[in-house]
Image 1 (tube, one colour):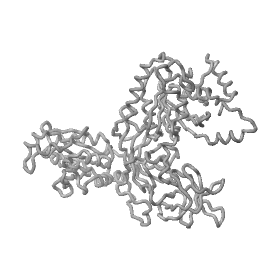
Image 2: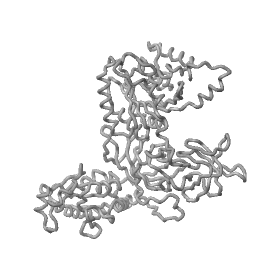
Image 3: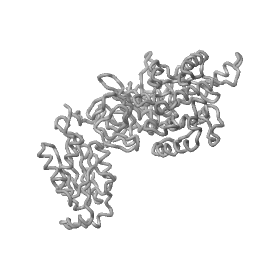
Image 4: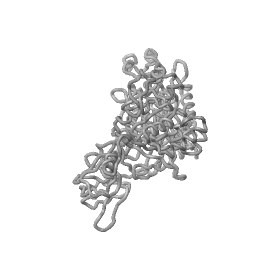
Length: 624
């Protein structure tokens, strides 16, 4: 509330109007256990006079039982279990205002067990405030929460190095933490990262500047929150209007109700309805308070069109010159929230805008290592893990990459048996719909196989895989490939070698993959459940990475035949080209899944080592 202005009966309406027009800032507090998130919020509420007297009296009474004057964390830890354990469990939302802005705060759990709650609280925030205990520095949970905040598209991060009073306000401590966390955040996609030394308990650099940090002149956390831009994450360029309800109160009125997810619309605009592709002009934009000439996100409205086009819940109104992607197959990063792990082949419900459709988990592409942010292969995703998966929806979805449009790039996964939300998902920029349909072009129905990759794998008794054996010419790629094919065939496995000499495997002029056996071919063969062995050089890493992205990291194996140019030259029996001449153009793998040297092992041993790796990946062990 505005605490500097006296409200009288004469100016009450003007005051309320001014309050209504204040800009709203939503921020979330994140960090590890006991870093002081709830204390910071309690201090903000207390020092901005956002606490009612009865609340203050109750907290003072509870605090005195513990020997303190005021325990500021008690203003937010409202559950009995939270007070007993001294940790935040649920997401607590609080509200306060200053003369300049209104604020909604989400106080989220720091315990790793409740990371899913943190992701929920952060999903609507404009700013993330991360707390770091000055005594312990940057912890893994600090990195986890910063990564999730970045993944969710929060543009601004304020890093509060808290409990500086317990480190005698030592500037060196602050600068060391700042340097370490700044290096980590440089790999993320925040627009801005602000570092503030503070003591939430003592109130230093929270609402008021304090003399204890004369070496810091960057302002308080409240000053930062009052000035930080709050509209950076909202897409106002791409008009997306998911239809929630068809409003038909009488025979003369037919409107499409919903919330403008992004962009803006005005009376007279031409809109297209997806998936039908039908177009019409906007006749009226109606609200409870009357018709509007123009409306923008995130306003809830009812749009009437000049023509009676057939649209219903789940369809989307867009502008014909600015279309989303219409996909069934796509990749997304997910924060897994269920105690039951995610496995490839499972089917879930996808809630995307106003659509609820079934989707199969085609593959687990990788997990994110939250220490290094590196991608690592995995066969499942556990609770609180973050990874990328590829999904196959049973119905077309109208999407944008999450980093471009969070409204149409976000979804949740729901367990169809328990109806529990099991994951929050963000659609990747590299949407893996290799033959994406043009939006609005769905007037012609294209037949599609109803057999999922999971069903094919169960029928064959194996998961598909793409194996690239790469190396210099004459390094033994084809020898290893055909030996591997023979050994896998003896094991009753379905396997195919794609080789430069068999027609299918003809290399392009640059030695890379031709369109015949490019990423789409690899994906189709892998989805069909085959082990496909690519036995040609693929000198460019980009070509090999394209195959990896197409099939997913879990189903991709890169084998490096690691002979040197001189050794290859000795083995060159065909004499068609010189390995020494070819070597400078070859880009060896940065980190192959397996490296074999035929001067040290036999061809048979090399093939056996590849099979051992496939078994380790459990590609031949399926749950029925």
